[in-house]
Image (cartoon, rainbow, N blue to C red; front, side):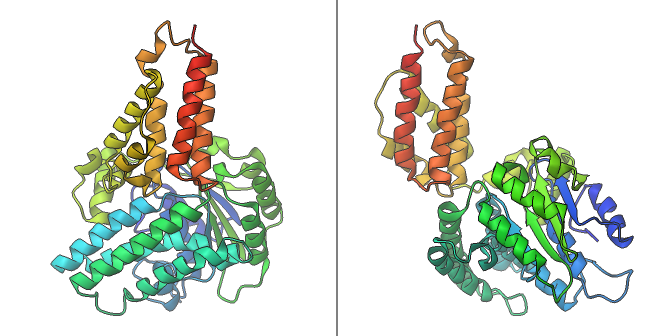
Length: 411
């Protein structure tokens, strides 16, 4: 069990609880970014659905039972995945691994195919009809989901990998649709209707083992969503398992914490993260200095350093009261596609406004000003991620807001 979860003691604790039937109905996987929490959650779902009759062999990654084969492709009907996540980085990295393995016919080609398929389906699972049926956006997003699924069918692990040119075209089409799906319809905070629909789904009788509801970034739910989830956790269905993940346990509502068992994940060492990169993505770990998250960011069309450099230029114009062409900023940042680049740009703005230049006697900078700046940045992010505003329009408003804050707080 958990052979693909590296350097996390939580794997041994979970395996022991599963083998001895001590796993509770609600658990929390808590730990840093890129520490394997989602990998672990999906493995729990696969292990619980495994049809292997031998107790000793049950749940092995190489299990070939029908259920495990489907779960490895993330096609199991008893798993719902919800919660916000930047999926595009993993898809980009997995695309490189898959195309490279296909072009060179490497021995890890099949593993690369599974890596790629799973990276895409981690996005698709969030757009299950179970959660979105009846939503006004469903009719608009479903063609994108269908297009991606149609392309994924051509990568079925039971059939030969397509030739290089065809494979490149398939992955290109998937990437275009996946980025549009994520940037246009991915929520930053889980909608309460999704919790309610997931609750109804979890209470329906299962015909194939336990139902598993995975909620990523549970700390980012709003209050109404938390309360709706709490009601399910207080009276959990008999055949369902609830798995929450978080990188900030302290931000999870105390009443929710009291109803889950926490399994803690730790920050892997740099050497361990390098090994994760080399074993998972079959790539040298020099990119990103050996950190998984930084390695994934190297696949962005615009490097993070360039995004932050542009953010510094943007804030410099505000500081010096210079007019700039916002459309040029957006173009320089690759139209902020994928949207995770917009988040990095705003982080760069946060760092820029903490520059020592801002502490001179003429800036009037104080804690109140910093709070106002943070609120303006958060509003800008929400305008794009929640209300689907174009980045250019959001940055136009942000420029005016930050300039207004500076002007109002000068001596």
